[in-house]
Length: 179
Ligand code: 5GP
Image (tube, rainbow, N blue to C red; front, side):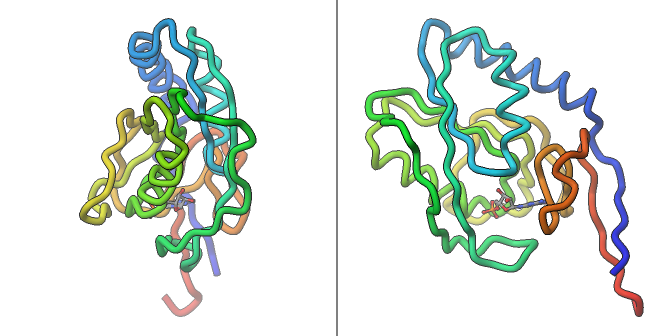
């Protein structure tokens, strides 16, 4: 199967947008300590880059989940492979996401985090596909870029574990030999 990439967002545009979001976050969380929670592996670039622009105290923690579905769409049936290492009870949580597509994963993870009784839970996502959102979903508090309904890779996002190290975001299309 031939894979074709079409550049969507450059590394420079990502950096500029993260700087803007960090300015907002620095105002909203001034003087607070915030637990930045990242879901492995797609969100690691966003976490690493935005956290270095933050001026308030942060802690890092990570979750690893498996979402059942095909390679290109989540089903909402989620298994937690690794939960948080630290207690977040009474703390401010900022969930740092790579992409929100249908929003099924987010609903599950936010519900899971709320059960730990944090002081607050907010969501930052680098990318959002609003046209794909299911009803009853959660609206992210901070969005890097709204993108159309395309399968994207790069800057932490993969297809079958490939492309995570691309510095920008590209749309991936697959052509079968007969198409
Ligand atoms: P949702 O539950 O919102 O439908 O999907 C969220 C998860 O599906 C993301 O965290 C990501 O792992 C995966 N996903 C959704 N859309 C894309 C995409 O366009 N590219 C890649 N690489 N993963 C995606």
